[in-house]
Length: 435
Image 1 (cartoon, rainbow, N blue to C red):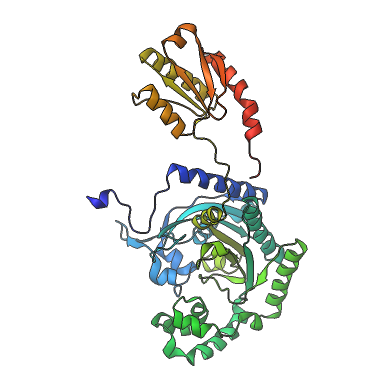
Image 2: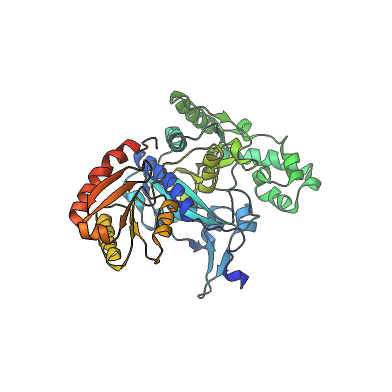
């Protein structure tokens, strides 16, 4: 029986009080992405397993340890998406979005699934806002993408975060670096975990991302990719930094950033906050110029990133940032008796047609209990209807913040016009335009 009333480990329910804050954050992200020319895409929650094996990389922890994979009734191997980029690239190719003109700019909100130890801000089911831009190899696109993230976080009022950038080069200049890493880690192979020993020949850069303490200790003195960049990759990275400098965007070059997925090339970056504890990264991404071709399309440069929504909400809460959550109830009509209940139903119906968040009691509560409930849900205004009000055709509208009473007619059309007139000024004065 306990399994029926308890969610699976690593999941959580987002209740109305929480989702109201999420909606504010999501709206900011939608609006900022639109300003930068991005359009929304929605992809399936599951894909063919081969998509993630090929795009994310078979040497990554995600593919080796964390994916939720199963066979469907047709015997096909299916995986719940562990990240959003692979699905976006698949959709780009399936629908030939590149024929509509370049660049193709997409954003999405996704739920993702990884079987790993649940931790603060990263459960087994977690949520991301992601952007993907296809078609430009120019470093100005990297800078613009980073600036979109900064625009979002600044508009939310987030403080004290830092932007860290790095370049992990292209396949050509990484070949020499890989050989150097192999030689470096081979000298300490006995200290590496079994997974990293397997990575040594296939992709030694994955060892740099291992969270196993002995592996991390060995990796801290490993050679860095920046010393092995080819001339083109170095010029590209210098261009990214130059555009960020011109825009006044502060950043730090962190040569240890490699990101956890195999498809990245050249620019990689992270947004980091000290308000998250050990899990300090709340946004990460970079360039993946080879992925579209790797998945069967024509070569097409691309880049993007994902923002962890849970982590963003945690930072905002830790910093005491109040989000302008809209009231759940603008008007609550309390009724005494059946006739008053019918009038309350009619008034609430009309107010909803006017886009007013109105409620009435449908649980048969006493008047005292109805008013207690109105206070609990934060109603802005209340109206009590009884025999006297019905007989006179007029009631008293109460402003719950100020206690002010306003006489108001009870026929539907007049009530609607008078209510809107009485509240529009107060609503405009109290509106928060900071987000």
